[in-house]
Amino acid sequence: MKDTETEILVVGAGPAGLIAAREAAQKGVEVTILEEHAAIGRPCHCAGLLSLKGLTTIGIPSRGQFIQNRVKGARFFSPSGLSFTVERDQPVACVVDRCLLDSFLAQQAEDAGARICLNARVNDVKREGSRVTAYTGKTRNAAELLIDAEGVSSRIVRIFGLKPLNFEGVLPGLQHDITGVHVDPNYVEVHVGRKRAPGFFAWVIPLKEDSARIGLACKDGNPKDLLEKFINNRFPGETGLERFATRSGMVVTCGPIERTFDDRVMIVGDAAGHVKPTTGGGVILGGVCASIAGEVAAEAIKRRKFSAEFLQRYERLWKIKLGKEFKTGLLARKLMNNLSDKAIDKLFRLVIEENLQTLISVEGDMDFQSNVLMKLLKKKKVLRMLPSLLTALSPFKN
Ligand SMILES: Cc1cc2nc3c(=O)[nH]c(=O)nc-3n(C[C@H](O)[C@H](O)[C@H](O)COP(=O)(O)OP(=O)(O)OC[C@H]3O[C@@H](n4cnc5c(N)ncnc54)[C@H](O)[C@@H]3O)c2cc1C
Image (cartoon, rainbow, N blue to C red; front, side, top):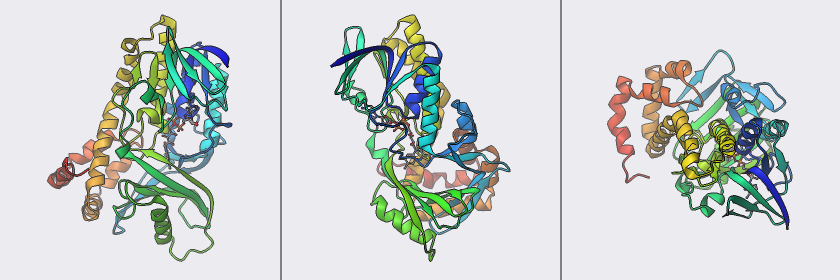
């Protein structure tokens, strides 16, 4: 078995791992990334809808080959077909090809000095003396510090005895890229409803006028059957629909794990539950936390401090920045999950009658949603709905 040594070892070359690696390498420390697959970004399991502001926040230019479309708003549809639109004058979000975006991030990490090893699946990790070691079938990789960026199925979290994601809130998702549809390329569609997509929603993300990324995630039921039903209902009578990229994956809606650090270890991205519970979007918020992890890791190397006591600053810092977002998002997700289709319709009617979509359009932020959610809750008529909303949060209704 070949032995390697580095200062920081990152397991997983998804966006979280690559961003953590980039940030640490930029501070001049030695970083190696181990990725199990033969190519970066493959297989892809993401719809690729990202806010333009969020992209800039995580150090990615909002122009690039990875951008497939730009959208200026979203149309929300209730179970009975009520709808409202939230929009801005200019595009606020883009649809990206995740494979190309991840490759771009890999290039950034390499430019900063990080080394990426492909075909390197980590099977085991151990703390050994003054090192942490990751074992692949062929190599034994020792480091001062390890960043776990394995994504939703992280094994490292368990090996180090940390509490993993609450899989009650990790949902199977499925999507196709479909041509031959008629969609408005400026707007994403979000379709909610217990029968349509229990515990989540169905999405139509336009790529062009005649093609879209269409998918859903759900807590109960079979995503394949529900998605077929959704496509048939959304595009009735449209013939010649062609599916050309089917992707599945697990959508994280359960919020962060209890502890995201330990001696010589930090957990980032989906593995840490750093995903918006409302939408399952994890690239931007996961990227923000990963970038904090990269900075703390570099500082740990420079100060030669690798204990949990020192690394807890990572958790303190991401909580300062995003703790409120995850908490509010989780509350909103729980509420939505427990509302009947009738109650969701009532909520939609309220939004439309009170013109709350204007408030959401003006004050909403795709990534930092707590501000507008709290403002909505303070509206008199929403407050009046509160008793039924709180009933929905009863511990007996999971
Ligand atoms: C259907 C679907 C649609 C989504 N749509 C959106 C969206 O529109 N916008 C958004 O922001 N987010 C979306 N997400 C969520 C987003 O994909 C994730 O939040 C994001 O990819 C998390 O990044 P990550 O780096 O933590 O994990 P991942 O992207 O999963 O990367 C983990 C990497 O680690 C590697 N790996 C795992 N285990 C090992 C190991 N033992 N050894 C070596 N390598 C390993 C994997 O091969 C992978 O490359 C979606 C998710 C799904 C399932």
